Length: 370
Image 1 (cartoon, one colour):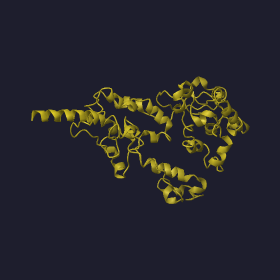
Image 2 (image 1 turned 120 degrees about the vertical axis):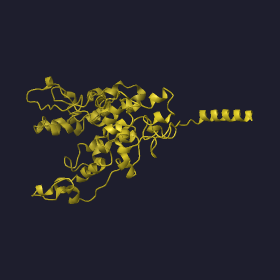
Image 3 (image 1 turned 45 degrees about the vertical axis):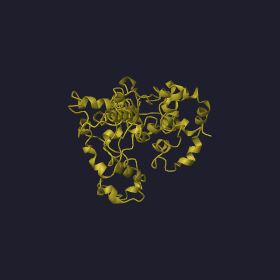
Image 4 (image 1 turned 135 degrees about the horizontal axis):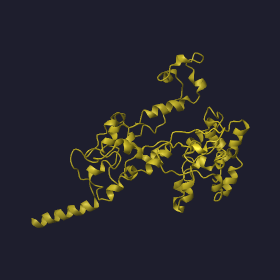
């Protein structure tokens, strides 16, 4: 009998080594997800931060540099990765049907990710096709009687109404601005006694970076606009096309013959080189940290250059050979078509360029791809 008990104990010990499990500490080993109840009711599920990246690149890169992106590492370094009372706040959606299960089954759901704060995103990433215009859609938010000339014919002036409506509808399927209570589920008295919401929010708060241009850079008659800046975050910076030319001569020569290379000249000819709404799409990085300021201060960014499509190049220059590819954003070599529609259509909108055809016009600027 004694021998049988010893064999059983040894067997269970060996199994625990090869098949680790989560030690449950009681009823508190699961988040309540109260803020996400409405989304779960609509059958929303977790998809992981990598899915958010194509549309929210700057926000993703800021998150990647935060402690949230390394939350699971803080468990593994202490041997706590199988204690559910710790795991619940260091992974995505633990305890929910679509959330983290274990490192083997759901490795992409480790760490505190986008959806940990904004809720399950499966509904948010689906494009909701709006094929036909209906005044009822606009009337939900707008008083159509104010425009007596056009009345309810919104689509005559807003041919891209479908994109606008789609954005509004998709924003309803995510928590755009999470409440304080979402944070306090984990940063509570028991786990984080000295947690200061206002102070900690600044360390993870993210949004597209806006440039805070120094007053000294203001030049007389220059249209330099001071924009409210986001919290200080280390991001890659713009370097200009000539720096890219050192390694990509063929691509640079191809680009120099396109309309992109003469984009700023078209503004000069029409006296629009100081117009903010034009500079955004005729220069590189205007309105962003280290981006175009004006012709005098940043002449190397005064066209639609390499970095307009491939992202700021400083990290790419400094990266080791094995990290070169991953240091680019937007349109990249590993999947050249993935970010293309979003990248191009930021400027080639129906209103600004109604004749734009991504397949046809791409042939005019394509380079480096056989």
